[in-house]
Image (cartoon, rainbow, N blue to C red; front, top):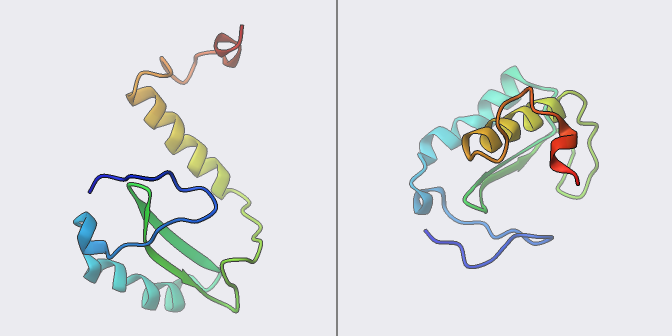
Length: 101
């Protein structure tokens, strides 16, 4: 599916099957979160710029703020890996100053 928009404040949601994702696997998330991960307040799964799964727990909703703590490290490390794979960054030892004039 080719995206013809760039998500900003409004993301479009599509059925997971449209993006060739296993909807059965996604449906397994909610009971698992409720039984084994009671500290999760929300989860959003995005593929190719479209929301394919979005659920909130413990009285939270899409407009509530969350303390993200160490989640940021995981996201940054994934983004760095993507940037290295796309050859935007040479390796993890490259200096940040290399990117600024």
